[in-house]
Length: 278
Image (cartoon, rainbow, N blue to C red):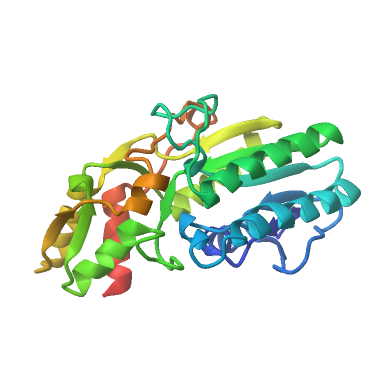
């Protein structure tokens, strides 16, 4: 048990993997207060841009209001420690890639915009009250026991499910859009390394640094599964064009300089997903 770390969001996909690998204080979802005199790892968040259709306030309530409540408790109980905020590659939005931590952010969609706003709240709050922070921006995370897999979230794993079910797989942009994928186990290791060795009051990209196109990944999974699914190229729907950018991938020089190297290749990761499903 790491008695120096309070984990908010420990029941989610990444959080549950993290506390399983690195046992820490797990803070219940409805609790705002950390264990006294501990660092915070804050993973509470919505996960996609589509809530604007069913609950346009959800991203604001989850990503901003809850965060400020926890920041206040952090100030009161852990003022000498570090607030480690987990952010997303989607804060970069329509910008230049590979994205460095200093690259200008131009996010689209309520999820993406509120994640960047949350980063700015963390920085402003901590600078105002002389507190320490880190912001860790994650790439596309995938792996076993993923929750909420759909077109909206974890699209790669959703397509693998379609291949298993012999369903038609629809690829946007001919499948040549690029993403930076990292297996959840590597992500947890990278987070732990940043908590241990990363500079405080800094932003760090967590990713493989290797952009991957969807089409060859789906082709690999289709061949591995001997699936009869039809791979169909389709025009992205209007909302996808409004809130998504074609390519998102990182410059991970900071992470690499800390000594991090991912262990699980994207193809090994797909093999693991397939094994879990079959």
